[in-house]
Length: 169
Image 1 (cartoon, one colour):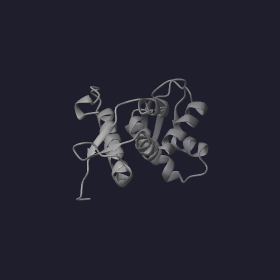
Image 2: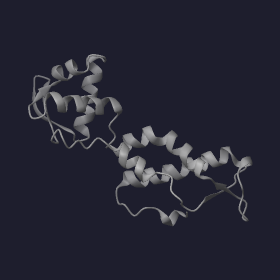
Image 3: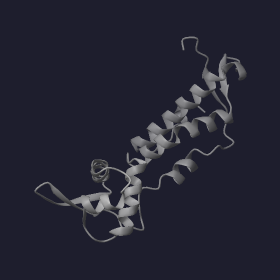
Image 4: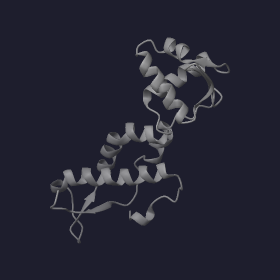
């Protein structure tokens, strides 16, 4: 696969995922360079296992990137909010009650994260007490990128990747 085979998707996140995936495959192949074949130009030929290792290493970070930069904790909070407040407004105190295993400060940070990513909206702000509302209906959460990410990078019968062997690393 050559770099000109890069997906034509205009979303920056998709381009970053693709480039990061290739870089990680290259790094894994380099780690196993003495166990890998080299082509006639002396480049290391990556194997399918290198892609599998790269995917396993990158999946948590890429899932966050693909979901609009929302961490697992914020995603968990959103799911709880969707169950408890599908069509009603809520405040940080209500959110704290849903996540009693973390501090109030952590929950407020997760609410800010969800608001920045557009998953909840700030609908009131009086005397430093914010009121929030879900931005998407509870049944159509935009925070389930794992399946699409994994499907996009599933190992397929694709041509081998070849990377230059580097003595500088």
